[in-house]
Image (cartoon, rainbow, N blue to C red):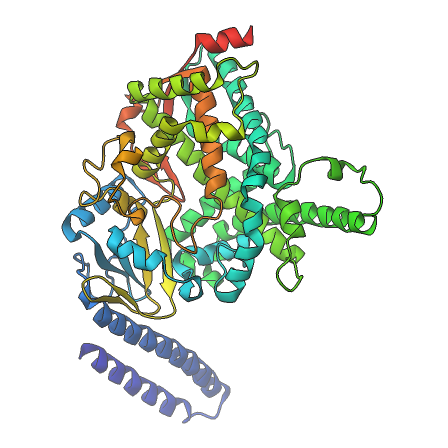
Amino acid sequence: RSLIFLILDIMHFLHGALSLAFSFTSLSGILVVVTTGLIAAVVVWTVKLLLRHAYYTHRLSCFSMPPVHSWLVGHLGQMQSTEEGLQQVDELVKTYKHSCSWFFGPFYHLVRIFHPDYVKPLLMAPGNITVKDDLVYNHLRPWLGHSLLISNGKEWARKRRLLTPAFHFDILKNYITTFNTSTNTMHEKWRSMLTDGKTNIEMFNDVTLMTLDSLLKCAFSYNSNCQESTSEYVSAIVELSDLILNRRLRIWHHWDWIYWRTQQGRRFKKALSIVHRFTREVVQKRRTIINHQRMTESQPDLSTAGQRRKDFVDIILSSKDEDGQGLTNEEVEAEANTFMFAGHDTTASAICWTLYNLAHHDHYQEKCRQEVMDLLQGRDEHEIEWEDLSNLPFTTMCIRESLRLHSPVQAVTRKYTQDMLLPGNRTVPKGVICLVSLYGTHHNPAVWSNPHEFYPLRFDPNNTSGRSASAFIPFSAGPRNCIGQKFALAELRVVVALTLLRFHLAPGVNPEVGSISGDVRRLPQLVLRAEGGLWLQLEPLKLEENESE
């Protein structure tokens, strides 16, 4: 009723303003008309926004709603990217069990989901009715373009088909050597620190540089040397990731016409130009090489590009759909940028938290180490090979449990082009954002016993019967799951195995606060990090000393 009266008051005001404007014939009268027109446009937009807000509020009444500041503001400001924010999710899960509604002013309406029975129909929905929402993904478009991560409908389906071969097992095998090499470089840095008496090491910075180094080699065959020296490209990627998070947290920055005029918007454009220029040059150069090879394919290929193993860009440049059409240069650039964005931070987070959990559970750490030592016994070189990955069952269990307890990505969001029916006769209306809480699902006491405890045996095959596949979703699930999850799991096992083989891990001390890292405050940003970093104590193992000799 109050909304109707508000609309009537606005219409009365506009009628009076227009009457006044037309009583003038001078320039001032024209200005009044223009101003009134602008006001009318704003008013129309506001009325439509409020009507939409009233509609979705009514449609979502089938879901329980946590307390709000007001009917208009809603939960604006209540969602926090802090330790307290994660604790808030724990409370929501305890209180609402499976789902609740949530809204940020009249702008965004969400349903938050944290139970497998509710997760499954949303994530397993056909790809042609699933849409990536503007709240999370729109800010990525300037960087990632219309890539697989962001595209929808037929465009998404075509790109998924074209990109799937790039993550086939036969291709991933070629990356194992790179994973070993990049890990060895990081370990050399750590040995040097230990020699200098520095045993307390912050993991996130070193591991992130290592995964970036690895991805640059796998994606572009580019040796950036970023683990040992600064790189303009790597620095730009890190800055873009930070700026995207900052933009997401400031709702007034969600509108481009405001954001691009801010200092942060200008920084984003500058970093973006560096990243796009690098990718464009690589793709254009590689396209030229491939075209030249096709023209001379009858002749023996003696080029450097022909002798080396194909990287990600090579493969997607050569992919063709059923009509014989491949990806354009712009599409290849978008997918390469997405591979770098989605692959480095998430994998780095997963590695760091796995090492953190093993440092705090020495008996599990020793069991993993013994498994790796038994696997590599008798070999001249201590490197992990492709065939080894399936022979690390307990280490893999620890990795999976760490992915559950400390998922790199805390939530995924979706919208749908039709109403979605959920259990209990609840319906998510078309156009509403579904926030599938990976954290909430992975810590739901109705799904997992003692959900905050690190217990790798949950993933023993003997203990998984009867558990919903939608209970463990660190890489999402369904048609739009993470296409690179096998790549990430392969790198995870290589890095964790080699690290345990060479170093003993123990909880470290954050020098800024002087506390053991067991008291770490989680920091859910684009990926799960830790406030002040994640510190571990390293001790070289005698096995590694003998190997060096």
